[in-house]
Picture (cartoon, rainbow, N blue to C red):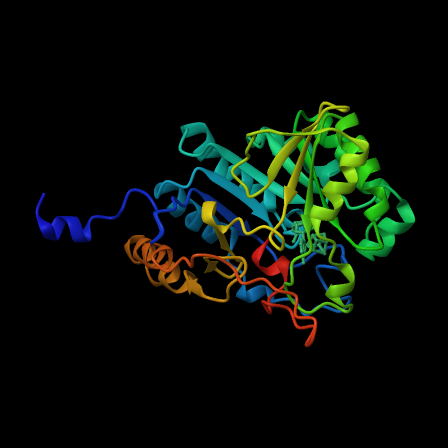
Amino acid sequence: MTMAAEIFEPKPTLVDPFGRHVSYLRVSVTDRCDFRCVYCMSEHMTFLPKRDLLSLEELDRLCSAFVGKGVKRLRITGGEPLVRKNILWLFRALSRHIESGALDELTLTTNGSQLVKYAEQLAACGVRRINVSLDTLNPDRFKAITRWGDFSTVTDGLAAAEKAGLAVKINAVALKGVNEEEIEDLVRFAHGRGADLTLIETMPLGDIDGDRTDQYLPLSIVRARLMDRFTLEDIPYRTGGPARYVRVKETGGRLGFITPMTHNFCESCNRVRLTCTGTLYMCLGQDDAADLRAPLRASTDDSALLAAIDGAIARKPKGHDFIIDRRTKKPAVGRHMSVTGG
Ligand code: SAM
Ligand code: SF4
């Protein structure tokens, strides 16, 4: 092979400057949501004008470019992905990569509010596993946390997902003084229905109405408390994400911990995140981003887009600098989780 061919040939896989193989893409298909969770959004959010959003066809083209570059896992998220109009079109389109074997997994993170409507059809598109966010089992507390959500709609959604044969993982954000007394119940609830449970620390993303230092509960404390109740056995199970898992001996179920604040998991980061406007964030906790919408729209040919993706991966930072600043109370990163997608 000549030197020139080496320089211009598109790289078959995405490897960042720290040798990490980028094989996982999260795509936020909308910044909108039918809930207003207190740790995620303020009550009165200003959302992007619809004209700024990539069309579903453009999202398909972008995701497919990443699949062509060796991405094996695609997670559709938001905002609430299932409130995006005609979202099943995107799932159907992307399912061709599952059928061809190019993609190992097509999945989503959802608040569960639309699962009664969509669970069966998602399963038909090759979705096998979904993450459903549920922070409490108390309907009044659920209303207080989500502001606009309805508990029974979500539990009906969980049942619909299970009926459709989807493996469910429940995500719960640990919130000081809100659900900290309920974590044991959440473990029993999830494991009782055959679901994994993953606990998440609140991350300082975007302005919210309250004070984040009030919400932050280190999972090291939660874990120590759970050990009074349960036997937690470390297991090597991984889902491609940052969670570290244990098996709870008494329930037989898996419990994951996502600890961006107390334990830095960046060294094994394999992911990048795409927003609904085509901005690629190479790290959830950093502001640097690459615009992929311009090269996408500049030509129907993908070469500029593929070069822009390579350029972005070459800038993936070593890690995040999350800190909840107790003096200024300002978030470390200005954008909300609903923009970059959880
Ligand atoms: N609407 C969907 C949902 O709630 O599952 C998908 C998007 S949501 C942004 C993805 C995940 O991020 C949810 O599990 C949510 O609890 C979590 N999340 C949102 N804001 C967060 C924050 N500031 N810190 C930690 N987790 C957060
Ligand atoms: Fe919506 Fe999910 Fe954010 Fe809650 S966490 S407001 S459901 S995007």
